[in-house]
Image (cartoon, rainbow, N blue to C red):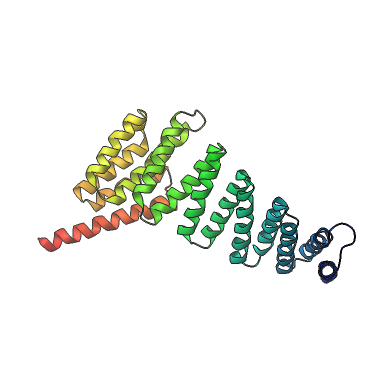
Length: 289
């Protein structure tokens, strides 16, 4: 490993020397770029990720001097991927530089890809607000390229985090819209019930019984088969228990559904919020009596 790093350091020094000297034939930036690229590869083999990242940044700067924006963007992306091993902050910073350049030269597909990657990094950092911002940018770019499946994957992430951040209406609108789209696609129809269940759970979190009832009516109109589904029966039972402020009935409905179809962590978290609201109302009523 140390031999590889030593080779990388030697090549990096040669590149620096090229940049300080004169170029009688060709371009000193081209020559330096070639040396930097080789140096970066040796650093990667030696697993010296910070050195590799720093050299890719120098490589990007050479390409910018040569007005090769695509190559510069790719070098910044390579820098970001090296820094991913050591620092998510540095990684994001350089992926953003790559993103800006790809946007500038009209490579929207690549831009969408890096928006999504940055969003995923913010997810890992549990910075949900920032993750949503970049997923939103990715949605616009994917839709611009008519890559609707990728756009909807990002939209579902936005809905998930919007609900976690108590932005329930935003989540509801996304889930309902994706359910509508899925109804017109034979390959995606199987997912409609799940999207409507998620939307219904977000409706429950808002605590408006009238809105919940109206939503369930709308979901039946949207998909006539939904009324016979276990998802509809769960939402209907939960809505009734919210209306009656009956915590026990609410819990039993969840247990019955969960015994056949395991609820994921996201649904469990949101339903726990609703249960806590019901408990609080129950305690208020007890205090009044």
